[in-house]
Length: 519
Image (cartoon, rainbow, N blue to C red; front, side, top):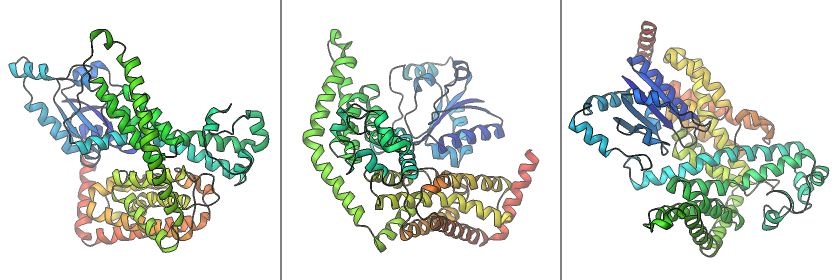
């Protein structure tokens, strides 16, 4: 059979492409042709019309709304989360085969009825899911578009400090750091630069480091508007963008921050969606998306943010920041352990993303400080996220007989994935041995997170893994924390796998033989 598939995940990085590779390889192993369209952070290369037309069925392995779903209308399909395709692609493909075999034959009345009921272009082809799942999809849409801004902004700010020292802020802003205020918005330079100064003046007083810092501030300032705008986009499509971005910008200016952006995104998306469903006279219908919906939604969302949301959420954000600043000693170590457990529990899933987003959002309020618990939290989260793949890499190296040839190859790749802070590298092991791998990774990551908080390591960059080590305070202790967590993870995995070593080695050997025969 011939299948087409679409894969996507909240961040558009690891799961999207791992699911695509697994589906293609499994299809090849089972004698079927699977062509995959990855809707990830690197952009989308749509499947051609000829390939879609020739397909017998469709596989949706996506945690976000599939773009252009109407292209596949009328074809039998299966709709699963992206993790299902990563963990068990064979089951997904078998379900797709069953869907094709059970579909009405072409030319029959049943097939005609199915085609008539299929969504037409312009109508939603979204799957029938619960409210909780839908809300999570909308939220993850905003987060997936926000993460590149986090990475770029955080690393630029960290490089500014690396090349210019902590005094780069004083040189740039001439004294106390004011952040991005209305005066910055109204000044002669873009957001994040001091008001009323030219690039030449900025370069002469703060140097190239100041330029890097200011560019990072621009990226960070856009976090909340982008989050809000694309949450609204996920709910209402294009009509949600304008009120979403305006509401997010107001959340940032009013000090409501990340929480305000979440509220504005859902409010803007819900309002825009409601407006698009209004029945209006034919003469007004043409100007609805261009004039009426943007105008009404921006006014309503703007007033809502200014008079209802702004001050209370800003106060709550301030209280959360003060609580973070109060963390020290034992409480900080406990927080580091909890964040480590979250990073390793689902390795790129919702809990992992909550911990990462919590850390990255904290950076936006602390980038100008000489020291802040937010920097320690970011360091703990990154180190804890590096530990699972590094632990699995070590485990496959020290006890090779416990693993299949494919797992040993994955272990080699995990050295680079772990060093790059790509926690998803450990997923193939977690999928194959969940009760042995996941608890081991959680313990190792918890120890690493607690040690980082205990050592007081700080990090201003939200991504980069070992490659941003020069930006970490006390880098030797940071490496020690990661190494300890890696060794603990590997030791626990090897111990648990060795509880029934003979059976494990026999299965691994059998799989190696089967792979050799297939080759």
